[in-house]
Amino acid sequence: MRTGLRAAANVLKALVLLGGFAALVTALGWWLGGLGVGALFALAGLLMAGTAWWYGPRILLASLGARELSLAEAPALHTTVERLASTGGVTRPRLFLLPDGHPRALAVGRGASAASIAVSQGLLGALPPAELEGVLAHELARGRHRDVAVETPVVLVAGWLVEASRIGGFLERALLFVLGPVAASVVHVLLSPRRVFAADALAAALCGTPHGLADALVRLEQAQELVRFQASPVTEPLYVMNPFTEEGIAALFETHPAIGERVERLRALDPEWRERLLAS
Image 1 (cartoon, rainbow, N blue to C red):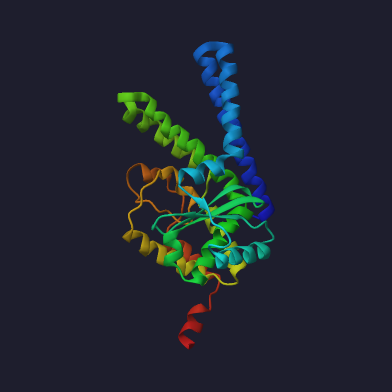
Image 2: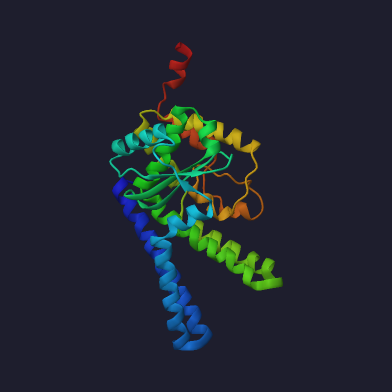
C-alpha cells in the first residue's frame, strides 16, 4: 500500500474508532436512563473522543513519565532525527526521554506533522549510533504512515476499558475477564502486524540500509531479557518491539510480529549482505 493510502486509511480507522466509542457511550446512557441520560452520555463520549484525539499523545507520554529532551542534552540525537525527517519529507518530531533502564522506544501523535518520539535512557546506552538511527527511523516511519494517528487513540480507549474494571469492586477480576478481551479485540481489529513491516521497510529506505534496524532488533531482544519492565500491557502497540512477557493479559495485546521474521525481511532487502560480509 502506498504511503498516502496507508496514511488515509489510518486516519479513517481513528475516526471510526472515536466515533464508534462516542456512539457506544451514548447508547449506554440511553439504555440506563432514556433520552436525558443519553444526551449527557453523548456529551461525555464526544469529550472523551476529542480528548483522545487532541490530547492523547500528551496523556500517554505523561503516564509513562516522559519528559521533553532538549537540544542541549542530546545534540547528536536531535541532529539524527532532523536528518531522517528531512530525508522522509516530514516535520521533525519532538523528542522525549523515558528515565529508566529498559531499552525501548515509542512514537505517539496524530501524524507526520504532529508526532513525538520517546526513547529510554536504557536504549541510548544500549545501542551504537547506526542501530539507534535505525530505531529512530522506524518510529519516524510510523509517523509518516500515520500509524500513530490510530495507535494513540486505540491505546487510550483500550486502557479506559481495562481501567473500567476497577469500578467493579470485589467483581474487578470478573469484569477484567470480560473487558480485557474486548479491549484486546479493539486493538487487533484496528492494528495489523503489517504496519510494523511497512515501517521497517521505510526505515531501511530512510537509513539507506536495513542492517542498522535489524541489528538493533536483535540486540534489544537480548537486552530486554536482562532488565525488568512493568507497565500497562495496553501500551504494547506504541513500542518499536514488544517489551512485555507474552503471558497473562499481556499476551492479549501483542500486535508486533516475531523479531526473527522482522529481521529476516529486513535482511532480504539487501540479499547480497552475506557475500559482502564473507568477502570482508
